[in-house]
Amino acid sequence: MNVPSSAERWRSAMLYAWVSAGSVVGGLTRYLVGLALDTGPGFPFATLFINATGSLIIGFYATLTGPDGRMLARPEHRQFVMTGFCGGYTTFSAFSLETFRLFHGGMKYIALAYVASSVVCWLVSVWLGHIMASRYNRLKRS
Image 1 (cartoon, helix red, strand yellow):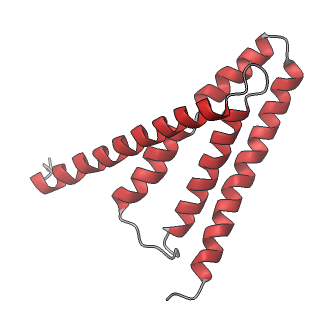
Image 2: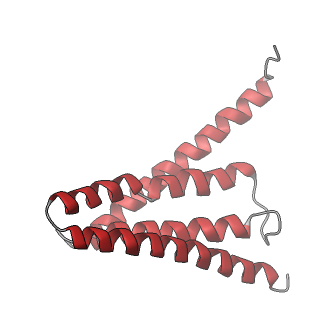
Image 3: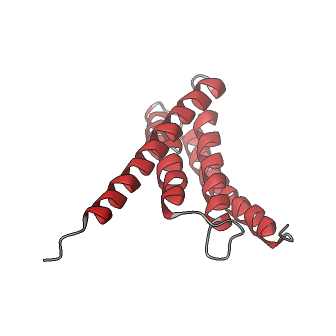
């Protein structure tokens, strides 16, 4: 059995710390954005906005810091943003609960509109993030 060295254990612990810190920042950001955009009962615009902007962020950052990206990012920084922040910021469990509540409350057409608009927004947002970072990557480096 191969026992990891103390340096490898330290790197693993630090990676967990980066992901945890990103999750805290993302979760707090989600909470504050949710408060700022709360529209009350009905269509959950705040969650739609949060998931769309989270998709934009992850699409942009993944492309910007990917193998062909303009910016070199350390693995722990990518994990902080993509796994930690975006994971803590986006809220698919809330999306599921809100959809269930809309259906259960007899608002099935609003629930269906929410699901459809959410999926479209998320996919368009991640695509836009990718396009934005791809264009930025092609700019002449200074």
